[in-house]
Amino acid sequence: MKNLKDKKILMIICGGIAAYKSLETIRIFKKNGCEIKTILTNSAKEFVTPLSVASLSQGKVYNDLFSVENEAEMDHIALSRWADVILIEPATANTISKLAKGSSEDLASTVILASNKPIFLVPAMNVRMWEHPSTKENLEILKKYSYKIIGPEIGEMSCGEYGEGKMTEPLIIAKKINEYFSHLNSNKKLKALVTAGPTNEYIDPVRFITNKSSGKQGYEIAKSLSNNGFETTLISGPTNLKIDENINLIKVETAEEMFKETQKNLPVDVAIFSAAVADFKISKKSNKKIKKQDKLIIKLEKNVDILNYISNHNSMRPKLVIGFAAETNDLKKNALKKLKNKNCDWIIANDVSKKEIGFNSDLNEVTIYYKDDKKEKLLKKNKSLISEEIVNRVSNHLN
Image (cartoon, rainbow, N blue to C red; front, side, top):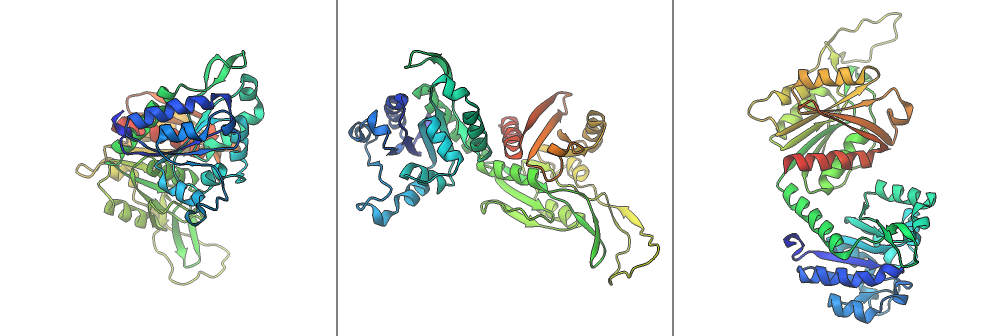
């Protein structure tokens, strides 16, 4: 597991019977060259001792949020910044519930809330607790926050019952973390460009025509690409959305501006065109506000087709070009037509006539149409989760 060498892992050990397995996880990480720091919750100390954890991790064990000894260090900030990843093992039903609610009542939960690093959860609990609707609901919330879930497994538990809820074995956990870093290292060599939001085409200084778009899906895709190691540029039409500082955000307003910025930021390895670019612009924009009239005739002319241009650009074409198709009818027919006519590699189509997954919704349901005649449906879920699934497929394709 060569990708674990020199990685900084913050392990948060919670109070469940599976806590004893965390000692083996620490041993595996140390064997593969990781630097480990640990936080023991108060209940975890009922199952494993700070001495055993410190001996294996060869480092200090943290527990107290208000430690006089470490007051100057502000542990909850320092620890969250130090780590490459945070691993919560075992993640009990209680811990999952607290995290979903944004609780910060102890050092562990405060560190997690203060962190902007990838967080891995390793659930372990009784089968009935795992199957309880509140647990499932809390996990969905955490997935929306980009938590990565490892397990649980199906098997016999310490309570004597059999079912899903058993903690994933330490070796598998270590392999999953190794895979994450492997993916990250591969993607760090890759550049991505995303377009998002609408464009505005002005009639006069105060009026414009536009396409309806919140930009949410494009922004989530850009975040996911960045979180997975891509050097990411986001070219955005007018939105009120915020984006992470490590993403190169370029704000534009018109289709022409979006086209010019796209050209400037080539070459890239993958370009994802999720923006709702206006198909037409005003032939002759008025420099002054047009006064109210009984009738106004506006002459339109076709805007540049950014997706079509980039897909057919011989020298600067990205390795992977992905377009979006927001449709209200004949989804498959229109998506396949766009896939062929634009010469892109994938088309991601969604039915915006459905209010629950339409404009401004936090949910989406899409079908990916591939150039090789295959298709894949991503069922309704939060746009952040849809983005993760799309980016996973992008990574696998490019690597």
